[in-house]
Length: 121
Image 1 (cartoon, rainbow, N blue to C red):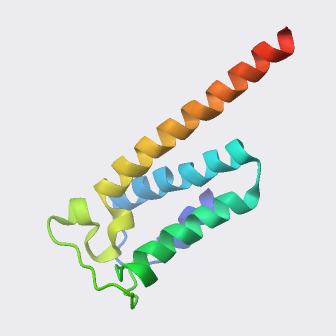
Image 2 (image 1 turned 90 degrees about the vertical axis):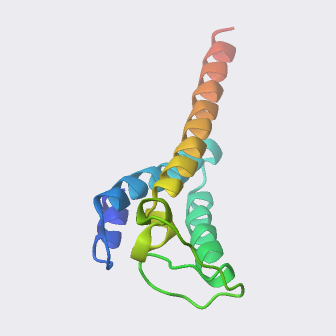
């Protein structure tokens, strides 16, 4: 996770909220890795995230403008839209990914608990 965050640190328009967003966004593939026990699921998650934001919707990805198939834009306060860094550095991304992270973490813990109960029997 540290290397992933450091890779995004060199990008333009980095804010403290961005670091929170990175921590939350990194949590989702990490829990995915634990759920499916496959490295490529976590890599695929990040690839799909960037593919949808940039080449599909045409939004800024990691501070870099990318041509997209759809011509989308964000408007509003930088806190909610991510400002010049893009939607992945926004409070919206933190909340959505935080909710997804929490749900997936609950699934992992529930799965482990059920395995422990099954092994005891």
